[in-house]
Each structure stands twice: as C-alpha cells, then as structure tokens.
Image 1 (tube, rainbow, N blue to C red):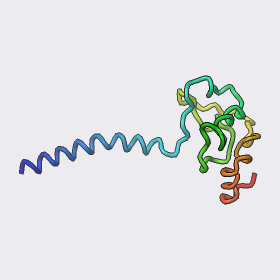
Image 2 (image 1 turned 90 degrees about the vertical axis):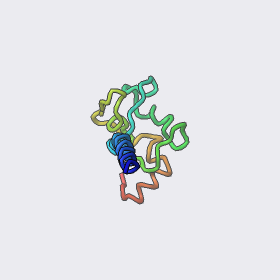
Image 3 (image 1 turned 180 degrees about the vertical axis):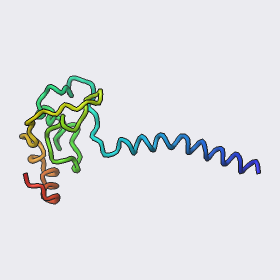
Image 4 (image 1 turned 90 degrees about the horizontal axis):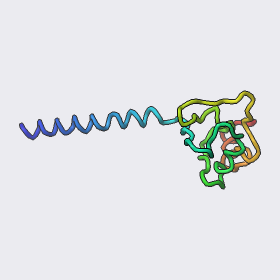
Length: 114
C-alpha cells in the first residue's frame, strides 16, 4: 500500500515537472526564432545582410522547410518580441530563396511559382 502511494506521488511529481516543459515546447513550436540581441541582427539592416549568414552555404543556413520569403523582419521578432515588418519589403532578394537550390526546389513541390 505504501509503495503504491509513493509511486503515485512520484508520478504526480513527474507530471508536474513535465507539463510546463511540454506546454512551453508546444507553445513555441512552429514559430520563427527570435532575433538575437546583437548588432548582426539589427532590424535596421537590409534583408540581404541576413542572407550573408543564412544562405545554404552560410554559417547558419535556413532549413529546407523555410517559408519561401526573404522579408525576414515580417516573421522574426526582435529580442523584445516585437515584429518590424516593412511595407514593400521584397519577398525575394538576390541570394535568397530563389537562388538556394534546396529552397527553390521546394517551390516546385509546393507549387509556389513566384
């Protein structure tokens, strides 16, 4: 009887600790990552500067399932959690998704001809 109570107590602790972690993962899944709070990720820069590191051959390439857009500040929030979309920002810039074979190839499979 005592063993069942201690197992139930252990189970309650495990659920109590795992639930916030699971909720946090679920709440942030599918959201674009926030921009780091450094000068390399300043929102005042042009999107082409982002592509210096975030092309397929860059230091931090975008994943193959990245949306077919290059207007970075329309989706990626700054370190404070604010968006900075720019009206008329290009959705495709030189060196961007159209020039990336992995991303451009995914356009054909998604039927996104821009």
